[in-house]
Length: 240
Image (cartoon, rainbow, N blue to C red; front, side, top):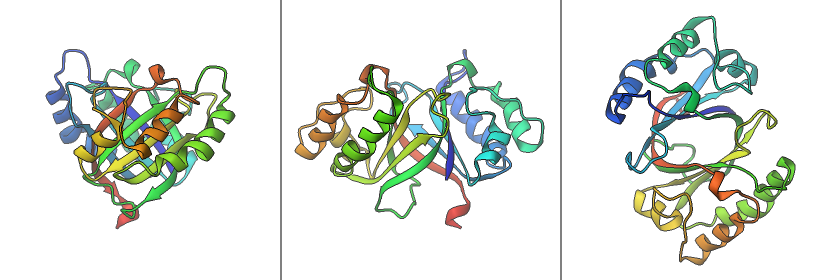
């Protein structure tokens, strides 16, 4: 399944609470009906004061061309749809988002572990927006991520689901990928991945320490935004 992930930054002069209210009461009813969308989920920060962003919006499509038609080309932060709910949603974006500060990534979801059968509503989620280490190609990054890091990350204590989002057009993407780790509660997440306000972490458990040590082999830590929040399922045709 193809996925559009947007890291949301509120408009200047708007509080986080005002942002959440507009996002959920005004924008969500429009966005969930965008043509081609089969699943829509949001991630709200576990600690808004410590978070780097105000939230994450994730729209899923079965067909990549439908995604591009609705949300723009693979290389653009902005888009200008001319039809239906996509046009209506785009017009509302200016009412609550700082577009220039909203990174996004279009990619294909690859599920590496799933103990919840895809039902992620209410789970706590660590999303890491990955940037490869200097001197490494995107292809080398993907190879190391899939073959060296994934087997380690799957074993982090408390992880009930692990998914990767691999960019469909890496030459246009702002990140080399997204790593999504799900936990049943916030305490389990913090035990495995550190406090929500830190991009880096220093776990004690050997199965959490091993992937942390491997991170330095293929990631640029300082360029890697991360977001800790609770997932909220808005639409899920695949679960009906």
